[in-house]
Image (cartoon, protein in one colour):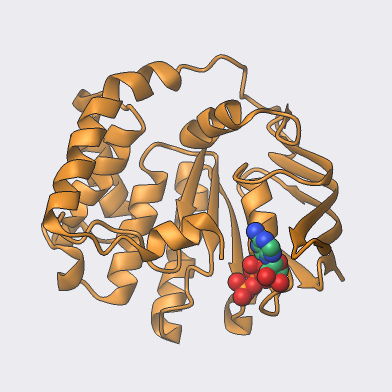
Length: 269
Ligand SMILES: Nc1ncnc2c1ncn2[C@@H]1O[C@H](COP(=O)(O)OP(=O)(O)OP(=O)(O)O)[C@@H](O)[C@H]1O
């Protein structure tokens, strides 16, 4: 299980932990604001891919033996696309998503995000690009249980170092986009699973990322709620100009994808 999945699963935190997160967010604000000043030109020309994966392999050492998980992956994400990675459990989808998100690096091959070589960049540089340009959505929603929907979205703006003067308008806009204007003051336990996932989506797009990565975002939802989430994804691609790459096991939602990559044992077929 990827560490960001584990983090998501561990967000059932106690009250004092919520306080700690809020304090660290406040402390992080000036630092984050300084960190996310663009030091490289992240704009891309029309028609160019947002992300390119070339001949990527990932091998883990398990008990002294190499485990070849990705065995030569080539793919492309274009601006404003909805792309799905489909495959059986253990086929390597999350491992690939981690590479695309700059959370891990390939053993061999190249990954370019807006022309930046993720495969050679250091951890700090990839973290900066990720904070500013990417959003993440998890199966387990990753919401702070003691904060309202509004406060959850606002927290992600604080963490991204967005100036406080912009928070209210942006939080309201993002919650409106996912159809939750009337639920802003509700806390996660006062919301349905689909509504919680929509708060998580609002949270992930609040800082205006170019790329949204979602690991099984509909896995915990019934088919009606899953369809709602896919409709929200289509809306935000149009209105927020974002590209979405998600993993799924669910064959019923594949038809809304612009492209489906089918993964079998570390390869696309
Ligand atoms: N850090 C790691 N160390 C060793 N093996 C790993 C590591 N990460 C993943 N693996 C192995 O790589 C394989 C693919 O895992 P991955 O999580 O990418 O699959 P998946 O397709 O996302 O599966 P699921 O749909 O169940 O989430 C699995 O056999 C897993 O045990």
